[in-house]
Image (cartoon, rainbow, N blue to C red; front, side):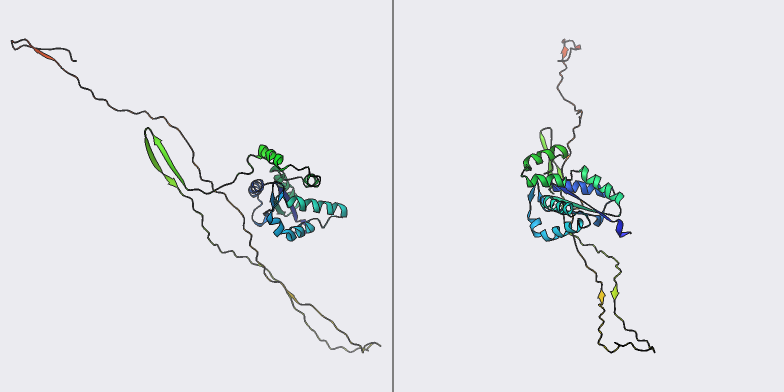
Length: 273
């Protein structure tokens, strides 16, 4: 891969819900694995504890991100704006192989409400940002952006007629499993060498002088870093349906047959009652 074509795209979101939706859309578009990173530092315009803990790492990230800009004033303003806005939201970072993929990733981030850094930075500087109004606006555009998910054990009772019927329950349990991960790295080692060759040539006038040559030896070593990320949400609920059932049953009643005898042995059956 041509490293010079690598592009990094960032999107800052007011809520983790938006960031997760954007990450899901990126995955569906082919941006998977280590290509996408989600880091939460704040929420709805408020700086969180994560930013204070990782402030040096975040600052260093934006220093490197804007280091290649020629206009120093523009570089510093964009860097400061990115730092300030990122400290109050959730950052989605997308690493792409070329400009075309970078544009696709940027379009997806914009679709899910990535913040305009310059505009939001100006609002923060002028104290014009209203977190409550922003929350209402986001909810109108993207639904409940403050919604969360839980894992519950559900017991469902169904009433049929005048009798309660227990149809069972659904249990969802989470537990931790381990899986082996194996990567093959090519590590480089640099070793100094000394080569002595016999020569026969006249010495120069300053041949007798002290000299010192130092060659630094280096070796690459593997570094392992682990990052936890949410890859799936499991929601447990129930769907309600209705049906019409026709009940067929028999009803019993007593019928009386009256037989009249006239005394001559003749019997006459009268109508039933």
